[in-house]
Picture 1 (cartoon, rainbow, N blue to C red):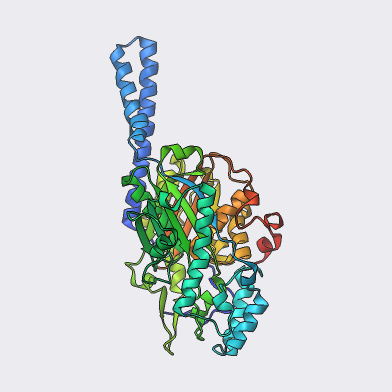
Picture 2: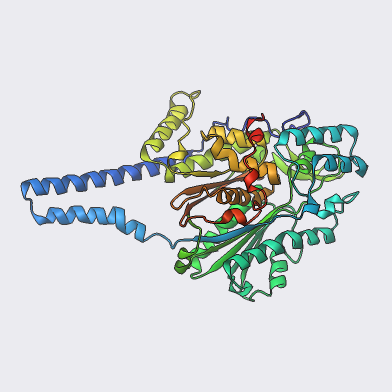
Length: 494
């Protein structure tokens, strides 16, 4: 595994959208979806033709009945037999206190005083910060402001209280629910897994019911928030009239790396403090007050591939110090995982013509001309808002380029990275909060949240806005600064 030791400036160079590997299963899914669209189109054409001919020639009424039956089965009965809807009632994001701010100058001054970093490592982190896309107002937990940092268990538990209690209480206040109204609790935190678990900490703090269904997701990386929503969706399919809360965060004090191997220093520079709480339900009466309806969820991973599996891994360095290594293989692995995700999502959402063009290009590449380019579908025909991973400025722009997005579609990701940094799984909710604060999300709009994490994994959630967003600019993490954004220099800087 080749480390990122040769890296000088950009934490993740441009390579994320250059992969070309396709699994036969993805092609079959796309083919199945395209054939279903052809069936629907053929039935509609048949029904229309029968109705017109029967009117022109005075045919037997049985032809009317036949055509209407076909229409009923394909266009009405199938949607009615679908699963109950899942609604996103509301969500909350942590606005860390100002004393947690970590401007570049303070960060670099403190690291030089820790005594664990050599001069080359400090210079390397300075270059990473300068090119990362982070701004000067991101936050680190109190434990990492000490010299040297406090990374013991007790400090990590304090950080848990700080990042999770506030968003939980804010969510309950917004939705006017009691903790005992919650039926399902899902918490995701990749790097910190105490015993009792994080979910037990929340249940104990808020005296939740003894029959609450609680789950704790660890080691799932930056896509874990999307995976939490997917798990909640599956549970809501079988538990009727239920409320589910998903809490997403990352505990940074346990992930701090005090060594000098460059591939492990990246997370010190990029990851910052944040958390989010999301309330989901399948109660139909909640539709009137909910913000979004869940349309699609999708999970793709490549842990079966050894090279991809080891592209982002927590391990010890040569001195026995634990850190998280990012290798150059992560670029190819992330690109392949993202490509698979896009292919499957497109097969379920895109118009027939876009799916047809994409399918033909895949067929051509696999069987005719292996060096041919694969057509990237135009997702903007069906999705109005894109919530992208905040893994770094270059990564955001490469994903946006691969999806044919403009600066406007990438704005929320770039501004979230600039204002709050990479907050792992909770970043996607800060981006959505940005869009709401700008009052850009309108009733009927579709929002695509795309999460990518170690494993590697890629998760997708697509929401449909079901009510207008009014007054959101005075709420949430952007309330005191939304009028200052977007910062044009962030768009223009390369």
